[in-house]
View (cartoon, helix red, strand yellow):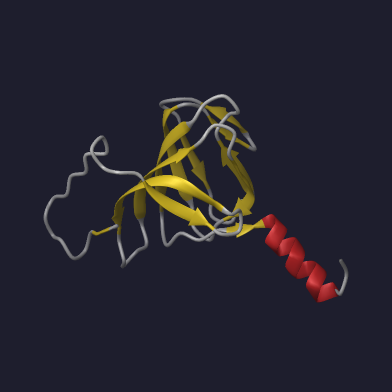
Length: 136
């Protein structure tokens, strides 16, 4: 990812020529196609292009950062509805959410965070609660 504070000059990214990388989500055992544009080490703000393949849903989770998704193509399916191209969807910090692609087509979004990105899955929280209570 580009360090925006180290380079004080205008930066431009041609997403049509950039190769897709992979954001590995170990908790789900999957990789998400990603094109990383910028990440500010001082604030944690980041901007990326992300594609969810048809049928993929990032199951119930939350972040300690807020983030927005601008839908470029396909339909972003969320716990609160479906959003097509041209829609910008903002997820507040700490919100429990689900989002992903429809069963029939990929969705590509411009993904923007307001501070360092993290992810915590509901099933991880449930596992910790069960371990703390001694139940299965």
